[in-house]
Image 1: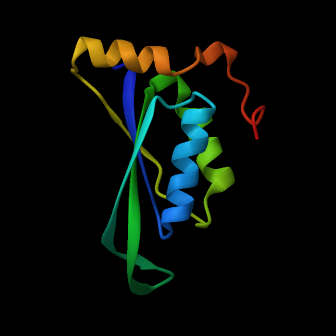
Image 2 (image 1 turned 90 degrees about the vertical axis):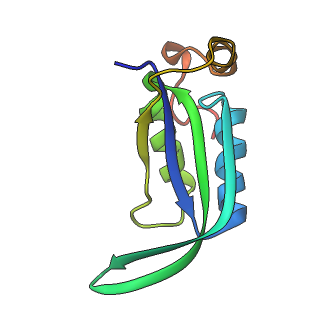
Length: 116
């Protein structure tokens, strides 16, 4: 199983997306968060088709930090059910992956909520 992942989330606000990015990197539970958009998302919510302008966050981290990242996103996010999905990184530039390792704290040292 891959030890590196990309986590994806979206937000309807550039301010919230940027806040998520800043906090995850500041707390060293993500090495990098890319925010892009706006994008247009179409989905069904409570029996109604919705179309919303959103901003896309791509979060790079270690697999062991997934729960910490998910918890932190939920504490910041404004959605009732935010999209938070992880995709394994199956291959990568060794130098980049080494940089990623150095950009996050060891999972054993992270305490969820300690840096709120």
